[in-house]
Amino acid sequence: MKQNLLAIVLFLLFTIPSNAQTIDLIPHAFGLSQPVDIASAGDDRLFIVEREGRIRIVERDGTVLPEPFLDITEQVRSSAQDQGLLSIAFHPDYANNGYFYLNYTSHPSGDTFIARYSASSSNPNLANPNSRFIIYTAFQPYNNNNGGDLNFGPDGYLYIALGDGGSGDDPGNRAQNLDLPLGKILRIDIDSGVLYDIPPDNPYAQPGEMGLDEIWASGLRQPWRFSFDSETGDMWIADIGQDGWEEVNFQSAASAGGENYGWRCYEGLESFNASGCASVDDLSFPIHIYANNENDSGCSVTGGYVYRGGAFESLQGLYIYADYCTGKFWSLKFLPGTGWFNEPLGESFSYNFRTFGEDNRKELYVAGVGNGAIYRVVDPTALPIDLISFTAESIDNKEVVLKWLTATEINSDYFDIQRSLDGVSFSTIDKVNAAGNSTTQLSYEFTDKNPAFGEIYYRLRQVDFDGSVTYSEVKQVKLDRNYVTPNIYPNPIRDAQNLTIDFGDMPNSPVEINIVDMSGKQVYYRQYPAGQNRFDIPVNGLSKGMYIVNGQFDEYHFYKKLIVH
Image (cartoon, rainbow, N blue to C red; front, side, top):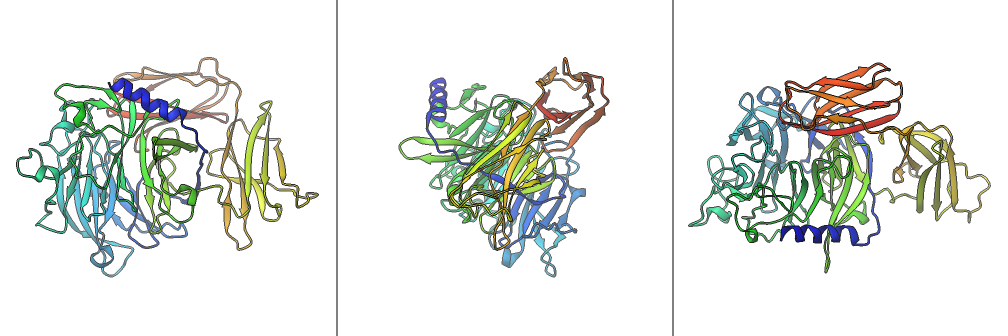
């Protein structure tokens, strides 16, 4: 039955026609350390959560204030990849009461703490570090799959996401155990009771129902990020898979709660461990899945938001999400009469995009853990000129030719061509030369005669008459020397073994090798001199979990997923 369901879903995803939508990422703020959450307090500021235990403020122009809003690093345990200060949520009446809530793993136990803090009464850019009030604690048996998100729903209640508690395969079947909070979404009323109260309509708070009163939904593995559609109230839950499938779950605003999303009985749509599981009819399956494959889709889903901003009409109503490993972005939407439709939005150089966030205008941002940057999510076609098309392709693996069409004549004084090797750090390589073109000549071409080898990114930059700057979509071109992806083994690996990276017949080039955990923390780095094509790397001491092995030689980048058992 499930195999047929999987086949139907895959058929729909690969046969529905589409007019491809794309997005672009515009750098907004730099200099942050492992940013894992982005939130708004209802004004022009963005609040950025740094995993080690700090909250930083980014002003509307992208300026990062030098003094943290709050620093609780001494209270936070962040030694493992799923630990740390993980998220922040501002009370719906924050403007009046100054309350905000944090989800973090505590030092030294590693247990989950949900704590309330207060803003300073004298300085809106500072919190009161002595105002901590712990309202909920969850025991964490392992240091991975701690969940970490929390958000206020449209009903004013606080929703808390907890992972299954870690190790692998959910050995205690905690996600299915309604006597435990792990592997669940909790829902509590923080405006009542001594610590909190139970909303009277919570599904397991009803007479005769067995289970923790706080539970709203169950059967989740690692619901790292979830969000509410600010227009409809629908909930979107991105659940990070184990070895097979990444999934996106949907809960209608009309739901009375109690959904069981299937883990560990199912991973995605495939049976995983059906021992003691409920009937299939009692499970809520994801609306979308993709394969956990770092050479294709990716390895770890990063949940996003339904776009409700006013700047980009073409993105309106799309649920936008990404993959942590590959830098690929997609959108999900419901097509009446057809069902859920997933559409690629593009692929960026992967800086380990770990979280999305909304500002007070409902515009979207995404954080790169790997480089400590915050990006604005934009529709690249929203340019002052009418850009009909923009293409970039290699010629004999030596040159890159850019071609584009516009509906209006280009003024070379404010339109230029930019190039980047990382998809972020763009620099201008030439101004558009429109000399000799009449107002009816709408075709333009430029040849980059000196491109670097590797992945090269191009975009068109325009400065409008009012001084505003906008960009075209980014086009990626790969120029290589027939390099092959290195063979990395054993994988999975145990921490007592050495990891081998073998390039086979590789050119005589220096090689950089870097290993990071899923939080973006670097656990190994070394630059090897030229002349070596096989590397044995000790991984003893690494915690169990997923890591990313990446590196570079010449202008060629590579990455692979690594599992430590």
